[in-house]
Length: 359
Image (cartoon, rainbow, N blue to C red; front, side):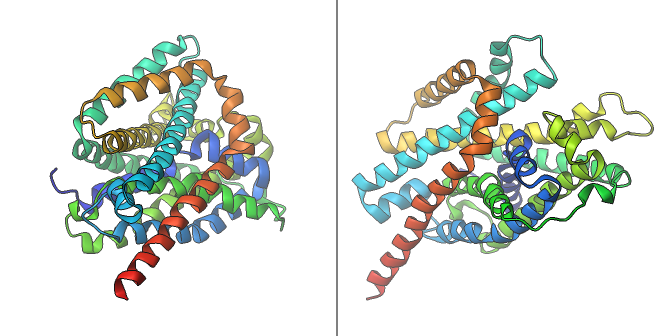
């Protein structure tokens, strides 16, 4: 595989931390924290550095190996494969939720009269093709989309900032639900970053600077989410934000380009769609590579099987009910439990292994 640049890795960081915000993370924050949701994001963004440092620590361990190989090295072949299988199943669950959220949004706001199966196929074909082309192609595409999105975001934020009414953030309430805001932000916007560990650090050019790039792009993503949340609440107010199904999309109708606003919202919203698609692609690449590692097979049958599984769930699940229920009630807990059980365990295992070797 050709060498990966820090910018390419950074673009993946951006997309992974943004993917669950639309429809899931945003919905969870405003339902529980109302007009003070931005404070939950501030707290979450700061404290989210803690799990991020766990990932960086794991990323730096045995830099020539990816996550599957590291786990085999740490636990042995049998237990290592069990750990890899658990992470694979969680990743598959993550992809199913995200893909269901994607097709639900597109059908509700763009293609309400289009059969669901056609929408699913429209997305699954490029996802299948992207994963089959390999990691380097995925990362190159991700970097191009990142620069495109940054330009769109700057334009959007500048246009919306003048319309913000500071009164929409009042009253400022001090409440226990800020803890939930922190948990929500960390669960949806930080925990998915474990997916970068499918990339061996040694494959990155100038990897002595990689840790710095990871933190920089994490901060960029955090600011992007915070500004978007402030725009929505500051312009719509909390009551209207709660009324809209996707206020993150509706707010873009307030943006105008040289006096023209017709459908510019659809172009600007592409940044959220790209975030979801890129994350699904990275997740699919992850589970395909993990399956090959566990079963010692190198054909593309796994990619086909997982695509069929995702299609089946997207067709069978009552998407609106499914997404709304799990995002508000159980999804953040599932993400957090996964992190606590797996990656904190890996952290202590690495520490113990280093101590044994030093003695």
